[in-house]
Image 1: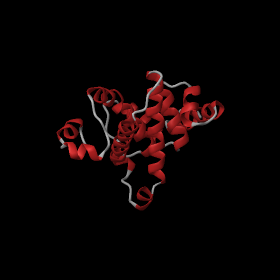
Image 2: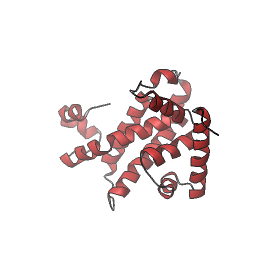
Image 3: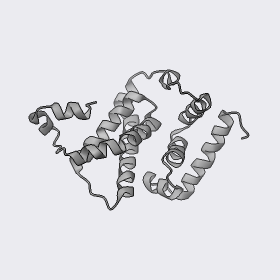
Length: 177
C-alpha cells in the first residue's frame, strides 16, 4: 500500500494512471477515516494485510468517484458501507479461496490488558453477521437503525444479530449464556 508521502513523490504520469486528483483536503479525509476503515476491514476479513489492501481500495474508489455528501454522518456511512462491501467481495474472491490463511492466533497483536485481548479474540471469532453488527454498534457507536441502513438489513435483523452475538460472546468468555 502506498503511503501518502510515497504517492506525492510519484511522477505525475503514475498518478495520472489512477485517475485521481489529490489535494490537501483529500489528505485530511485520509487522516480522518483511515483508522475506522482499517478496523472495519479487519473486522470483516480478520487479516491485517488484507485489511490494508481494502483500505487502499476504499480510498482509490473515493478519489476516483469524488462523491458529495450531505453531511459528515453521510460521509462516514459511505466509507463504512464501501469498506464492508469491499471486505465481502474480497472474501468471495477467487484469490481468497485459493490461498492458505495464517493461523488467526498469530495475527492478533498482544495488548496491555489481557481481558481486552480475550474480548477482541472472542469478537473476531464470531460469524460475520454477528461480528459486523457488534463492531459497528460498540466500536463505531452506530445505532441499530444506522447499522440496518449500512448493511441493507432490517432493524429487527440487526437487533437479533446483536442479541445472538452477545449471547455467543458471553458463552465464549465464560459468562452466563
